Amino acid sequence: MADTETAEPDAVPDTPVTGTAAPGTPGAEPAQPVACSRCSTATTLLHIVGNCADCLADMGLNHPEQFTEFKAQVLAKYGSGGA
Ligand SMILES: [Zn+2]
Image (cartoon, rainbow, N blue to C red; front, side):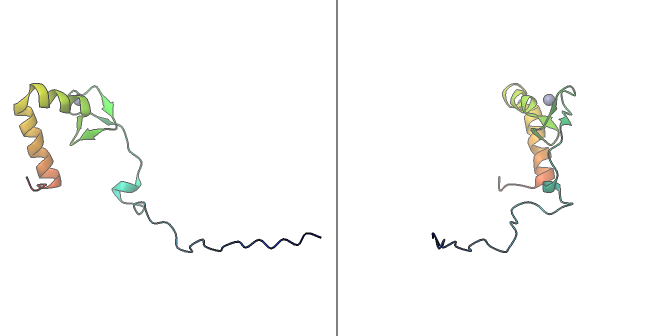
């Protein structure tokens, strides 16, 4: 007769995992593709203040005046990052 005693640790916490944003907050919704406000053709999940990553790179490399404007928009939307 095998009467094995399995010492099962009852270590499962009773508290729910609260690593995600609460329902109704922006972080709780899945990312939605957004049309780039600059090139207007690309829809992208990766965008900052409406500019797709391609445009960010293009601005940074080829259009410093637009990049300066973009940085001002970022500051206006998210506040100064101590810059
Ligand atoms: Zn773009």
